[in-house]
Every structure is written in structure tokens, then in C-alpha cells.
Length: 417
Image 1 (cartoon, rainbow, N blue to C red):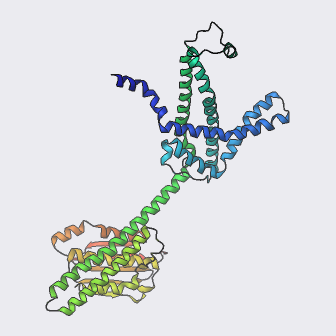
Image 2 (cartoon, one colour; image 1 turned 180 degrees about the vertical axis):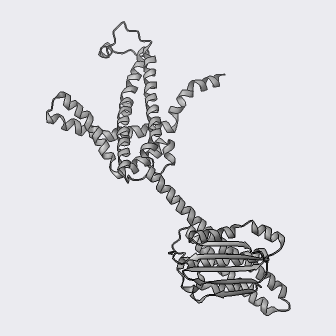
Image 3 (cartoon, rainbow, N blue to C red; image 1 turned 90 degrees about the vertical axis):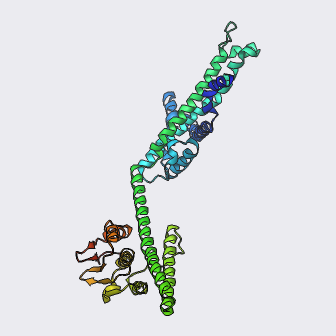
């Protein structure tokens, strides 16, 4: 019971004893200290103008307001205030990005915030200096024998009852703490609107996220196409080498060499993509293009695939962006044939017709289960379609009605790298 009673009594004091309260108090008091130079300059310069009592008093109050607002227009103030608000105020501003002011809208919002911060800080600083000693005097009046001259200076008559004074002192302290808490909470809730990103900043951040997401998707396609193809080819080559190892060691040796080359190529591609993900400038391995197509086709043949390929002589002169994507499209088409149909004859034609690069690939369909799984579409075909869409091309994939699976892609050559 005693413990519960103590918890009930101390519950209102918990927010004051927390770190958040003292951080906000220090933020406000720091703002009050920043405003002091404006007040000193105003009180020293304005009376020297001899403009009359009313105008002098008005200017002494207005000039600090104007000075704080103008200071807030400096771009770096938004960065400094945002960092201080995140660390000391907390609240919703913690999860928002803040930086220097880039537009006049940001500067105006920062000027308003700086003005509010400094003047709220002056109020809290004044209360923190004046209220505690005055409250201490009121609380100690009944238990301390004060000098009569001291009490008369405070305006306390001899017959004035002293028992309510401690309650008044506690009430003053509570009011001061309440003002600090309300001021800190109000500023923490207002900070996102005045220091947080503007609508233009949010749009720019969304654009940056979209660019990063598109780059991640592109790198995922690169990994899927290069490493996936290499693993499919290596699997078939290893199986073929194991079957003929005893009676055809020359072919097995050739297959093992192809496995080594495929693995090294996959490792180079993997290192290149991981280097991009780490933003590692040292990873500058060039991406494969149609100029490397012969090596890709040779590795596929060594895997045991009967490949009938026809490559136009002008293919090596297409733009770099189209050449890179076309290489990956051919690679993914061969990988799909290996995965879903096995070691079946594959026909490939790639060449330039007019201002477009065309790729045609076909192979016999596999089993019914393979056809069902393939018709549903996988990551490979989705990746091919994404590449074709980005380049503004056309893609058609599916059974052609004669028992063969056909992939046809047309890419415009006008796409810039």
C-alpha cells in the first residue's frame, strides 16, 4: 500500500525527472541565451535615437524579433536548428531529414521557427532564474525566522498568515514546470512543419527513392541473368562430364574447362554487381555486350545443347545500351530453354532490320509440367519484359502452336546509352 501511494504521489513528477524534459529545457534555455545579444544591441542603440518613450519601448521589443527572423533566413541556420531539435527536442522531427534552406519558403519557415525558439527560450530562462528562489522563500517562511526588514521589503504585513505561503511556492514551481513542458511539447510538434522537408523536398526524395529502386531492380536482373545462366550451364556441363568421364575423357576435360570459364564469368559479374551495391569505385568490370555473344553461345554448346545460331554482322555496331540489354535477353532465353525444356535443340537468330534490333529464339516444348510452369511466367521472363519495356521495345513469348516455345524481341536502335 505504501509503495502504491508513493507511486501515485510521484507519478506527476516522472515527466520532470526524465531526460526528455531536461533536454527540452536545455534547448529552450539555449535559445534564450542566443537572443540576449539582440536585446543588448537593441537596448543600447534604440535609446540613443531619442525617438520618445513609446517608440523606444516598441522598437526595443520589435528589433529582437526582426533580428531573429532575419538570422533564420541564413541557409545554415536550418541545418543547425534541425540537428539541435532532433537531439534535444525529439518527437516527430527525429525521423525527418533536415538540411540547409534551399528555397525562400524554407528560409521563411526557418526564420519563423528561429524567432519562436529564441523568444520561448527567453520566457523559460526568465522563469528558471526568478521562480525557484522566490518559491524557496515562500516555502521556507513558516520554518525560518526572517528579519522584519526583509519581510517588509517583500510587502508582508505582520499579521499576514504564513501557512498558505509554502503551497503558493509549490504552485509557482509547478506552474514553471508546466510552462516548460508545454513549451517543449509545442515546439516538438511544430518542428516538422517549420524545419521538416517542404513539398518540393518530399518530391525530390521520392524521385531519389524511385531511382534507387530502379537501380536495385536492374542489379537484381543482372544477377539473375548472369549467375542464373552460369549455374544452369554448369549444372548441365557437370552432368554431361560425369556421364562420359570413363569412355570419353577428352569431352569431359572440355566440359570441365567450360565449367571453370562459366564460373569465372559468373564471379566477375557477381563482383561487378556487388561493387555497385557497395558503391565501390574500384569495381569497374565492363558489362557483357553482343560482342561477347560468341563466347556465351560456345559455353551453351559445351553444355550439350544443340544450338543453331545466326548472328548478323551488324550486331556488333548497335548502341551500347541496346547491346548490353540484348546480350542479357539472349542469355535469359537460353537459360529458360535449359531450365524448362532440358537439352533440346535451340534456334537463335539475331540481327538488325532497319532501325530495330530483332531477336528470335525457339525450342521444342518440354513435358506438360514444364509447359505449365513456364506458361505461368517466372522471374526470367519478367526480367526480359522489364528490359524490353525500358528500351521501348516489343516482346512476345509463348507456345507458337506447333509444339515449340518462341521468344521474339524487337528493340529500337534509337535508345541512348
